[in-house]
Every structure is written in C-alpha cells, then in structure tokens.
Image (tube, rainbow, N blue to C red):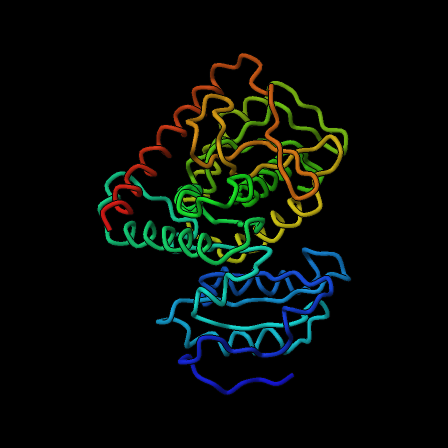
Length: 344
C-alpha cells in the first residue's frame, strides 16, 4: 500500500487501488466521514458484514474541507487490518471526485437521528441540516450515476436530497428504519423470553427517530410464544412508551451505523420469503401518508428494489390515526426545511 503524505489541500488522496478496474468492484461513498457513525459504518462494511465475501469494495471517504484534516488518520486506521474486501480507498473533500461513478452513497448528514421539535425550526442547527441535505442533492444531481443507490439517515433529509437530485429516480433513495426495528425487537424479546432475531414482521410506521409508531399486529416468532391479551396490551400501550423513553436518552451512534449496514445488506440481497423489513421510502400516498415525503413503511426487497407491502391496516382506525398524525408532523418539518432551502 502506498500511503500518501499529502495534506488536505489535495482534492483527492488515493491511498491505493483504482476504481476504474473492470472487475466486480463496488464504489461506496460515505459522507460526513469524520463522524462516529460514519467511522463505525465503514468498519462494518469492510468487515464482511454487508456484502458477499468475493465482493470487492472501493471506498470513498468524504468530508467537507473544514473537517477533511481528520480523514487521513481515519483511512490509515481502516486499512491497518488489511480487510480482504477492500480493493481501493481514497479520501477527499471534493464532491466531483467523491460522488463520480458511485454505486452506493451513504448520506450521514448533520442531524444523525436528532429529533427536532417545532420550536427548533428557526435554529441555526436545523438550517445547517437542511442546507447540507440540499448540497448533497445538488451534488448527486451533478456528479452521480442515475442508477446510484442512496441510503440516507433521516426522512426529512432524504426528501430534500431527492428533490434536488431530480434526475435520479426516487425509488433509488431509502432511509433507515432498521435501528428502531432492532430496538423494538430487543424489548419484545426480553418481555417474552426469546432471541431478538426470532421475531419477525414488526412494522415501524413513520421515521427513524421518536416520530414513529411500532405496530405488532402481524408479529410472528420462530419459537412457541403465546400471544395472549396481556401481551397484546403491552405491545399496544407499553412498548411505544418504552421506545420513546429509550430514544429520549441518547444518540446511539454505533448502533445506528450497524443498522445502516444491515439496511444496505437487506436492500442488496433481499428480504426472506414471507418476511418484510421496514425502510423509509418515497410515499405514493399508501396508507394515507402525504405523497412526496419519505416515510417508514413495511417493504419487501428483491434485486436491489423495494415494494411497499399493501393491505395491512385491516380497517384499524387506531393505527390509521397514528400514521396520519406522524405524517402531519413530518410534513410540517419538511415544509420548514424547504423554506430554508428556497431562501438560500
């Protein structure tokens, strides 16, 4: 490996490899690469936890110019263990280099799971989050391939990015719901006495943070678990409150990174037969959600595409009200963000 000793004044620092090789090489971009989430995600990608063993990866480590000083040490750390799937790696602060010919882009963003409330829509941090999303969208529009897959942390962020990346199909964008799904499964497993991976078909309506509703009406278990009235009441009343309380405590950077990696794996290789996962996807007004926003739905995945699972409400007015309530809250946030984007 030929490590370059160049500073951040260079637009592109090639550590090793050449992404123009015609072999089976995936070019993967991770934005906001100096953050803890991005760091953990890149380790996960290079630790054979996402793609099949023979899949070569060309990793692009991207950060803004102001923070690019940290990238060289991050890249050296990533390559020290000689990951077998790593074909090449660069670090850069230049968007034209980072996003060119990318197959997958992970847009981490600034919010990173933070839940904004109405009073914060005028805050500088909210404005910065919206403008970074706009920048990512414009950059993807200018430099990325039309078939790039973009995985975003945040439904508001994805709505903005996809709006400004107009020529990239909306179906190419997805957002994270897997973190809340896994947290939900962990609490249910503790309650009933099974492993979390034995719980299937949880539904997370809404977003990737506290604006979500866990729907367990179709839940199934890989072992014998009796779903009695007591458990049903706990799932409906107590579980949402427990999840809200947990999400209020902290941001779970490493867990979010692992969930992003698993989200990518399921999207790439598909869901198991008869099982769905949940992802934030572009709303086509299914289940009464406002069209044009990204919202967490149950989806089937196959051949790197998703399909929203239909017919799950079964005239349940309680669940419908929860979905509509979250949709309204999310729409207000998105409108506030677009007011900022349109004024800058």
